[in-house]
Image 1 (cartoon, rainbow, N blue to C red):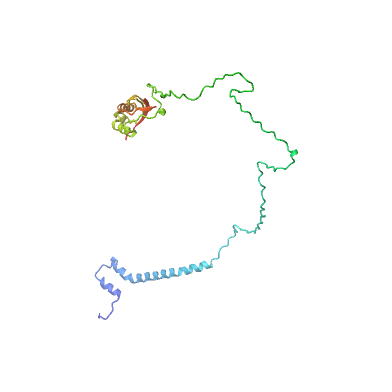
Image 2 (tube, one colour):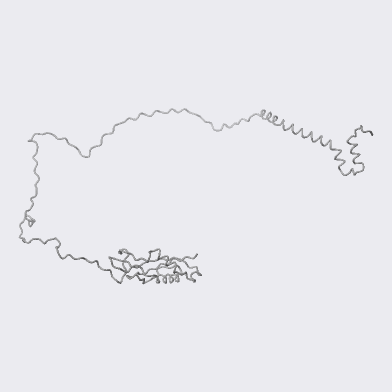
Length: 274
């Protein structure tokens, strides 16, 4: 074989697989490769041409298909011309003037003989003697009536009564309410500092408001402490609140009419577990 001779592909495959196993599959694939490639190219070109022509085919068929006419007329709208009547013009009728509440009669000039004479109004005569109180004369006394003027001398100062020492005074009648040293804010600070939450109440989970009443004496000392309200099972909280109130310092006493008096005071204390 010369160098100018062309070797076909089949002969080339035979030369390549001369001493190899041709039943493996590679020999058969290489022999069928040109035919497989040609078929793939042909199918691809046909698909491209089909998708390019498809829109035109669909447009042609859509123009041929007749439109289906619906037999149902549906809603028929009928327009009717309505002539609007012109409303009659509104007449501005003047309203009658309101009738006067008081009728005015114009004066009429009449002769003197036709005018009735008017009787003069009788004026009651003022009595000259103040002791004359009726039409009959009654024997009286010549003594002058007692004078109503206050005496010119002997003026005294009326002292306001002092309130009772035993009973507390109504707070509404006080000129000055009793107060803790420093005011109400200092009182709550003092209570918060000195009060102790009982351990038994903590373990039982008892909490709530305790209301006490006590009397602030004329000297500022606290007495007659009473527990008015406690939460359920909170008697131990009432005892602790009583202990703290009993140990309070002296208050500034209340005053009524300038005198120190006893005043009953109400104090709520709330126990809360955190």
